[in-house]
Length: 369
Image (cartoon, rainbow, N blue to C red; front, side):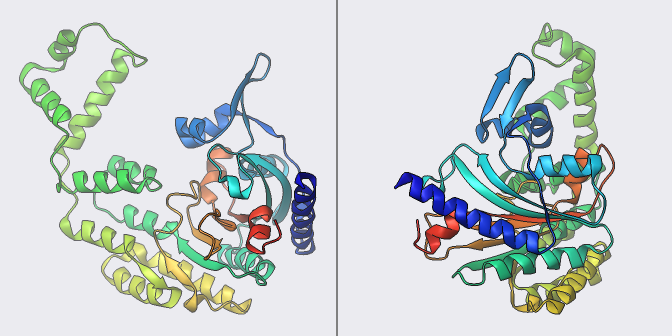
């Protein structure tokens, strides 16, 4: 039975991969073991809680592939031409994955598109391809655009450091809200930080450091002084205005059909012009989706969608879910990840969008496995 199950999954994954090849994608493979330092730079130490990490005396710290996107981007940045379409079909490994859809090891079949000429058209191509591939299954669709929230953060009249902190925690909603409340003067400063600032103001930095004793931990004294300077600058910065906090909270709450959200976004852009680019991007994408037979105005759309599960996406995002199977993970998901290409390209960036399907979850929806 186990071998029969694996055979069904492999057959389905090959069928999906063939569909992506027919759409113009080049089949590619990647290593199963990836250098840990690359993933740690992207995700921080959080990745250790989700990935399988091992150490080799020759290669150093390695990670069993948690997804295909990072190695695909690295490969394209090194040798790919544009536009380029890739598909892959193979196992990934993640701790804590739901046992009902493959457990810690499961198959991903994906499609990635690199094309800087028309991002809206590329977004539409990928979504329409996934929607068509999954059309015979009873799945709930969700869409959003994390770029709208990022644009709203950029519109804030506050320090670059504060905006960078908010952008960094977009994918951690709880931490994001706490930062916004603190930067907006809506919560009390952290007690230990406030006490430190008072001591420094009264005694001076040198005396406070001397009283603290020898330096401990990994930070040098110079790094500690730099950090204190940052805290002093932040303490002097005026709070984000109530109007801007309300704007950001309104953006976070944008939810409805694509048409309803676009209308509300246009209204917000009249007051906060920095949101105008998000309006234009959504209009262009909706028109491209319409040309492919997708009624974007009727699609469910939520700015918050994907903030807790799609870590590196920074634009249009989508997901397909089994409404009546809450035990299953997302069946398919994807989106735009331009910023990821910039990080892996060491300053060079390429507009990129893609997505993955979990064939075992798809077969579970159909009642085949």
